[in-house]
Image (cartoon, rainbow, N blue to C red; front, side, top):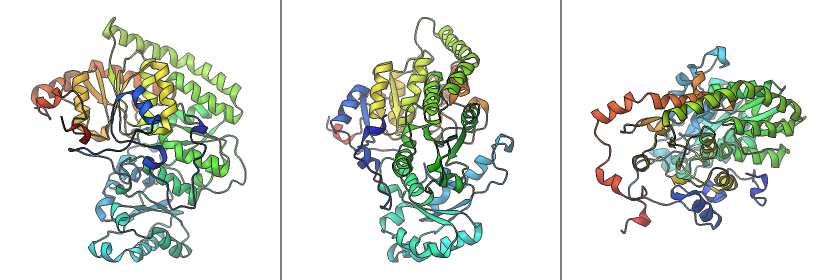
Length: 510
């Protein structure tokens, strides 16, 4: 993805929040067809969000993407401006992240600082700005944070609460910087709008004009599905050439956000997650960036490091690092590739996976690097931000079918049953098993997973995930027991339909 993808687009920090991904990048929540056709439709402006006659689930701009990220910011507090239930996803994150040993770098004193305005029916009718201001004062008194993030909800969005007006009134009374994040679930069908809403608030309220540039500082924005081991691997690699990593947002300090404008470059782990903050830092503070490739697999890790070296004047050191790392990791990846060949013989091992559109770009080349075949992939949504990179991907590895389906389990089960791949990868948030003889395993771990086998980034991650996929083919007992002892989740007729988008409204007249 080039920086020049949309030269006319300008992030407007005078506005309260960002535009939706539907508006900014012509995103869609549903599609099924060849990647080449998806590219043509995107270029023609034909992509749009659509309705289904039957829908099982979807993501939430607030809870699914923002809560866990903002909750770990070490010297900040969160206010959920909505009914108490909207804050429920915060309850487990403290224990989830406390599973990371402090020996691996997790801060010893780690607490989740959050409260809710607990909106009631009366608040919906008469407004709740006074309640919000009292919550801000309580957060300042209780936690003494350096920043207070206000996360909006469907309720505060529907009633049109004047968040900025309340913030302007109460800011002089507190020491913390108040950061409104407009992430109400009803505002967008594409949950990745939540990424942009968060980064808009960070750019608008937290990042300071750089007093100096730090040539050895690299911004790396990481999301929930990259693990603690990925963090350690990135730190290890860049540290070997004298570079420091400014990891955001998980476990960052407010000072780290303030210093984002001082970095030499912003590098991606996921291009779609990093897009808004990268463009904003370039526009407002002159920080260069690149969005592809992420460091998944040996080839892409090489290129990722080389691009960082270009912006930090470390090109010679990076080449020496790549040569050194290849001696260690390339033979290990080749051994994994040979094990796959032994399992399948002259045939091909088919793998079905993806998740977010960032993983669509990163995992398919990695599967190809392992000698695995992937003729279809799943992604929760799609927008034009990755259009150029998807074209490059098709040129590199060939055409694939793409199912865009916002976590519709029945559609995923349909594609899995009809394609019958050797390995199916699923998101931990959706459960991890389908009733089938061949294996199903997770596509990624959770951010708090500290085990070495959970890594997917960098050279260590390429080998770790390769071994993980290899193990999935050698351990099928669970799937066989599941097939024997449980009934199908869906009726036989469902799998007989030619198209997993059977319930798409435009296709129900047949």
